[in-house]
Length: 447
Image (cartoon, rainbow, N blue to C red; front, side):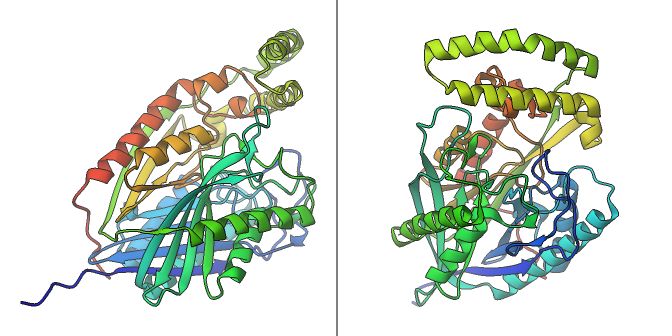
């Protein structure tokens, strides 16, 4: 009797250049008002396709500030019509670079931006088709390590320098490295608002270094739960040489994780998602915001005094965050709150998980704080959790209630009420645990 052959996992990689040819408005900084003057380094859309038997999935990451849920819906529809992938088996995310064009935002009316968004959709479909066609028998290896001195908590004292990173290494059957994909929580904001050149920031520099270390491979870096994480405490300057230094440091850590990776079991693709309707947080009127501003100094002095007594936060950092928060509140009040910005009365928050054998990818359409990302990765145990932020839409910061009470920029710029944050995380954990136990999946029609 012949032994039944194991079903192979097929993995394919592809990337397309999405650097705008036009001088477009740039996204990421309120203080930046000038359009781009050119490109320092390329912006990419990178696709990773997985095929196992008659099931399949696709991960996409773009060097953009965000992706809108409407654009992702259109992208899924076109990919479904061309490849046959179920929409829930497709996850598209942004790296959250602050040196890219102001595209895929919730609402835009700029004709040049709209043209580029249409071009992005076409290019991403090309990347998806290329990755799907390139999928070949592969082995997947997994690694999770702590990375030091690159990302740190930007709201609190500088004690948190160790940040977890998930690395997936893909080899062909001859053990040649085909590619890596990485989850790392950090605002890629080495370059400041004064920069007017397109750039993937230090994530792009890191990916190039990894690809040089492993020739003929592709490296895709996804952001994680980065709401409170950045290079604010770790960068030595906001210059191109510093961007390259941090990129090289991150690349070294990715290579270290790659070499220490352990083999993963292949298996069918499974996908789950849920959409939660969450009301937007109320913003004070302009008149109310003015009154709050006038009363803020006394409140700031009181909070600063409590901080000095408790010694649990950097007082200068707290004052900076409070000032940023007040400026943000004024801006939001002038715009009339969150509903006009998003063009709707509530947020449709899509939480999605895709499982490929031992690997569980959890997509979040918001900027959650890093501790929540760690909780979600832990919920995947004994499987391997891979958390993707800025995925399948963008609903801004979502501050935990304890952090929202402290105020500051992230809390003020959170469109969703803090009391909903624990509910959203609970729902995401339930999805992760459900898919960990799942034994069936919607099949790929196989076009």
